[in-house]
Image (tube, rainbow, N blue to C red; front, side, top):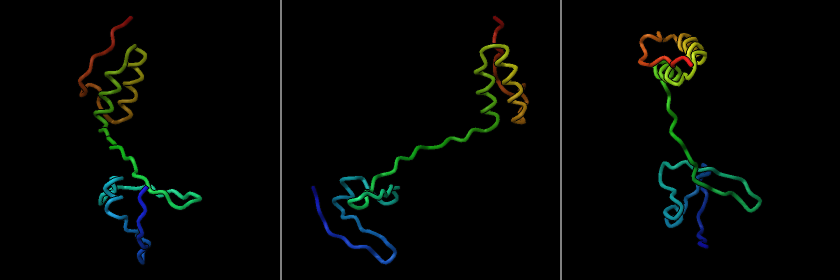
Length: 98
């Protein structure tokens, strides 16, 4: 276990010693989570995931191409129209009747 001394700056900034930053991957710009514990404050790297935003046309493509039954397809057509997209403008195949 490594123990080093540091001090708190005027605005509450804490300088984490270089060895500990390297060991735990605390590089400049990395998001961290500060958790309160009885013993003190625990700092952990935050896990972030990219967020994709889909256009209405891409959503329409998903809806139409994932329809399995004629009922699914009818529902998908309504949803696509709610998105303000013309279903005829989206490349897709109608499901076969069973």
